Image (tube, rainbow, N blue to C red; front, side, top):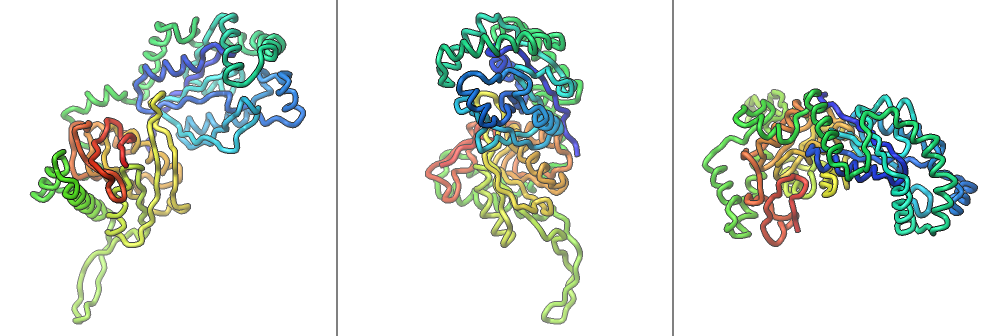
Length: 450
């Protein structure tokens, strides 16, 4: 199985030094399709009754290495580096406890891990490809901590100052500041240091290119005029197909006609996709006692998985073509702050690893949502060669990105465009197809519906 090599960056610094803000600035400047930001704060240990009482009195030392679940932290980081799924704890700073739910994360092209003791454990230190220390003046850190703890975490002034003087400040001197010696880059003044952030971004870009990873802009230009990958299967163009596309691409097409022609095109592309699955020869005897030589689908277990929300428009057609087919769903949306595709909902058959999976999305633009959906399926032990991505329309950049990351995934579409933008009208809504037409946005995960 081919996976893009991952880059793990560690960001360390004192409490309220601006580590998270620096991480977000790096993410904004990277322009890499998939970046995961993970905070060390997620790994605070579950407190016992005595420790919980101490915490409410500002007498528990949250800045000491013993306050963190280091073993869980190592396991999560290792799995992320391997591109695997992890369940990350969610910590509640107001109640000093872990929430009952967790956050599901997947290994990304770039992982940024930030925390006050990021460089403390030697095993974690060895995992990091780049180590950044955010060095901010202690007075500024204290002022930020006062504001944050009082406004966001319900603490009082006396308690915050007590905690800072007895635990936070000594911990910085004893455990955090000494690890500055491990840093590859020291960033004075935090996120306001534009020059340092620019150098960090350039370094990450260089490392990714050396590993063979193509950045989004490089992909867009390097594939211009290049032949399509062998894994792409395009629905044969006929006068009927041309006519259907003429109707669904026209914004003035009446709603009822738009729905009719869209459904017809979905049915055709799914029938074509199923014809690409393996078949075996079979001889049958007709009621007239005549031997007939034909073919039957070799794989008996087929599952459809729609990438919500637009993928749901294809579910009825795949059920019509294959009776009693099981349908799974994956909801992926882009975090507007980080640009990271995030998994919000997942429903798959428990034995999906035994199925041929038809992954459905109405349009594929950058390929980011499809790539994450494929990674989700791989994490559920579905063989890469058993996945087929089916769409009405794909952009060339999306096809190349998917084929580069997963060369054994079959890609099927009814049309291929240089790019997809808001001028292309494709799928209106779900179920009853909504109340009006909807155009696609530049990212797959943001196709709207009503």
